[in-house]
Length: 68
Image (tube, rainbow, N blue to C red):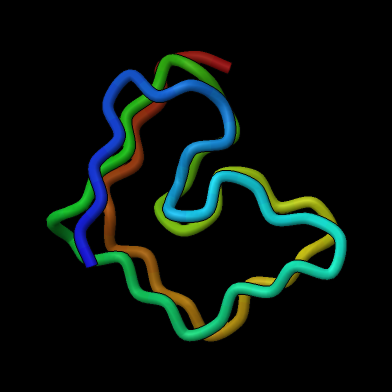
């Protein structure tokens, strides 16, 4: 899977925010993906994780932030 976020705001990733009983399983974000932001709460798979679960996932994306 390939994703690209540039100049993203908060909660950016394949799944912007996971909370409560949210579960993300068996996901790979490839090395041709990137997330760039001047803010925080970003990731290749989940931008912000609050009480959820990420299981058996792999991120190869480049993550760049210059803020937050």
